[in-house]
Image 1 (cartoon, one colour):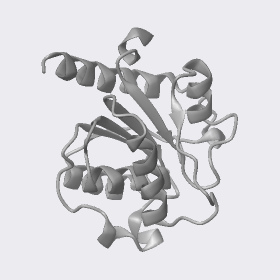
Image 2 (image 1 turned 90 degrees about the vertical axis):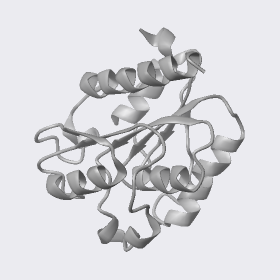
Image 3 (image 1 turned 90 degrees about the horizontal axis):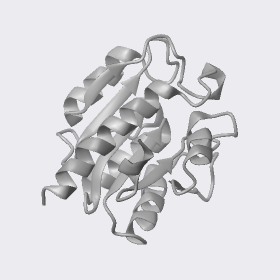
Length: 184
């Protein structure tokens, strides 16, 4: 199944404090060494324009068709980047996005559909964004919303290991992107 990633580039965009070794994002990088990670200058300072610029910077280094997997504030940086310039991005997986209002960045985010396929996974007991708010943002961006159930912030503390359900969602998005790239 990993063959679907051969023609695609996958960028991992962690949230605050980066994703430690037990976080599914880090575990995915262990499973797929070709996945690349967006590194922020300051993991403790959630600055949307700066974090988004880092996503932009990494995207510009390689123009292959790209899927971005953003978690928490990294999901917001991903959306901000893609909304300004979707070039080469063929899909985004937004997992447990942080509530834009908690960081006073809602006005900086798009209020309309993203121009690339997107899937958002939320949790019923996420302390960073309640499921109804996540669904609202998913509808606004025309993202397919998946309610993952009671998974907390869908991070290392959630005890998900490699998070196989998330990988299935990524495979689904990659298959869609792969098929659309091949049809061009």
